[in-house]
Image 1 (cartoon, helix red, strand yellow):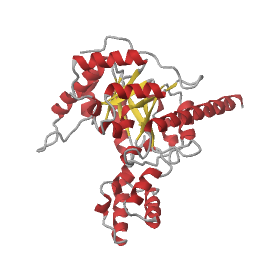
Image 2: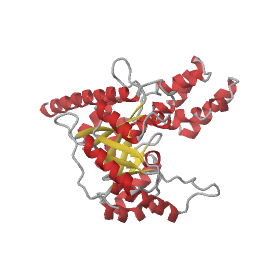
Image 3: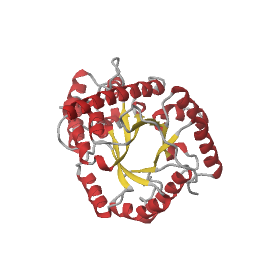
Image 4: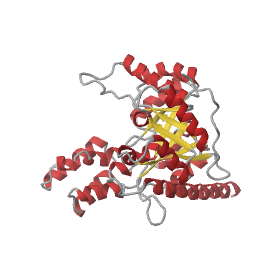
Length: 356
């Protein structure tokens, strides 16, 4: 199955910019998992709240028959998008290396599994597929499929990686070798945070960490050591305080691998290859700002770099917050306000710089 209808165009978030708004349905993970919405109800909520028009999905979460789609699902999906005036932005593919208990996927299995998802994305009308963890050899094999299906293939750059991390440099070298406009990156703003999110600090406080432990955690996080070294140092510190690291479950490591502190200026190094943006956020404070992510500074980089595409809101506070602790729809609305405000400021700055 391949796409037969043209992709509808979304309007810019702010005149003078080519940046458009939307969200990934992953932002409502907790409500979806709790059975608050079926897919039709979820799309209704997005329209009512005015937080489209760009819609991104994580295929493994949204498609019950993942990695393939049924004809019925395709028909219902396209009818819903026509009814709501939505625009498909990004189809999130997963490799799911652990689908078998006895071993990881072989390269051939990775290829076949991903191709099935590419065909699902095409059938649903998505112009872009987000890939994760794919190594150069797999990217080379997938490129002809992307060309056949008229898809852009974008490798997600997520915390703790930055544009100049060794793993990303390897992908950049592969892209340079292949020299295809269908290859690019998904920029995830978790990579360029200036502080740890208040949401995870609240979670860890509920799990028993005191002010001193939380302060030390943030000091270790802010160092330039790699993630394994920082996590190891924090584990040693917990032992010295008589705290069993396992009492924090996975959160002691998530504090590091979901919060990167690369300088936002590094986005400029790959800006021409950024095809899609995960506008990651965890909190919006009483001033309408994201306390751990400098949206004005990041947006300025994207405006100056001439980025044209979606900022797809990705509220990942649900990873640390309990159900009903926050309202993700309200938070996305506020984040869209923050992005628009940041865009206007960046455009004003840009015009001032040009006039100087």
